[in-house]
Image 1: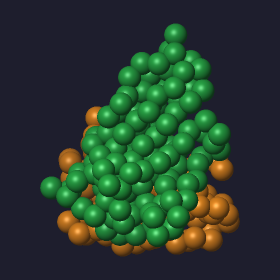
Image 2 (image 1 turned 30 degrees about the horizontal axis):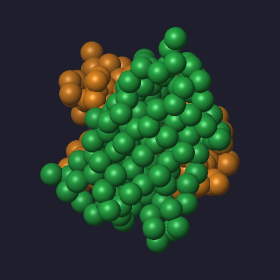
Image 3 (image 1 turned 45 degrees about the horizontal axis):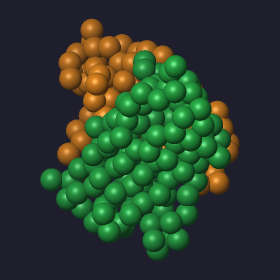
Length: 122
Length: 110
């Protein structure tokens, strides 16, 4: 079964850090880019960032709202992508999804995890 | 980059057709063909239903179709069914290796 499973969410104080993991299975994890998308409660989807494949030098890009605070990485030997979140703000509170463009190419998020909740609060 | 603009809500009766618009700018929808649509039911992860503007992934009903004109993309759902009630999001490439989502549209099947 093709799937992505996120973990690592939880409650953290403003200014704190948290690292999310995204484990893939059932497909060639090392091939496609891996993305993070978040969704605040009752709100829409927000693209957070991406890490490309080894063939593309593991290049990363980020949304302006998280640039300089969040870092995406991946360990293809473990079929896992990560989202390191530093200097967290209350507005970072959201469900964080990892997703991939495995089947249908750039811009088509065709595999999604179930999401992990991050709450930033004192 | 600003979010794409979608109507907050649309509604239709079973069997009818509805269209959801997604308005961007010449820097995103107007220039690039990487436009996708997602369906999200409450408490669930989004599901890809249209990619590259008008292509359907395997297994997605042909009642879903996409189109684009200028800076606006559209998702049409024909033969509405109760199970189509969900939130719908558009997403476009926005240049500089970034992507932007629309604000989402809640579809009610009356």
